[in-house]
Length: 284
Image (cartoon, rainbow, N blue to C red):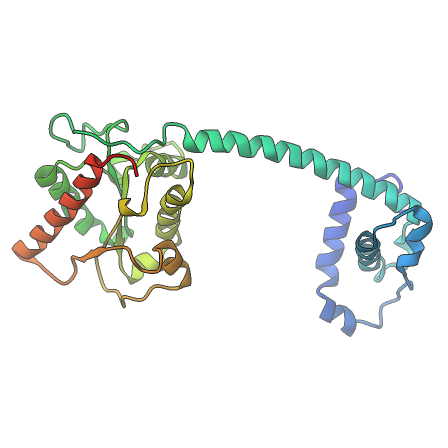
């Protein structure tokens, strides 16, 4: 009767606390000194639980919750009543999640149509406009000086609008929301790959977010809108996740770390020209 007056969330909390205290199945086998009630699926048959998998799961839950304290073993019908409440709460949560998922989808794809077209006037750091095509720069903080130089050349020599966090993030507002907005509206992404970048969960999350748009039928960006450059020491190896996120390592990249001087500047201009061409390209 221990669960008779408990609410569904209280029952679930008790269960979760018990599982955490009790440990995994291997530990269960090692703790045979604890008192335990013999428990069988058949105990639920008179409660009209016809599905075998439900009987097994209920038996497992009850065993987990009562092995260390047999006095808390609930009556089968009482447990069934609580499980029914839990199922009702679960289905209610599913309905809310479906509504939330629909809302998130609307927000995610709101104004996310890939922007193309001619740039009116010269772009600068001060006249950024979300309604014009731009490239999102994904980089590790330690690479900022190189990234800043690349941004200057992209703007001045290629007339490419760039989204750079140090210029666009507003103090006092959620940085994650601002970065998410920058990624959602971007025409292209440029990753500054290096060993540091590959180890950065934030950098990989930015790349993954844009690739999610590429893989979504609701969006019009394509893998041709994904650019990368080698911006520092890198072993030129892609782990399993990045190999998937770069379509088997087929993303074209420029090696900016291997050149310097005029050759470095030409490499950046060539990169900017390729990005600028995607700005002019119609939706794929």
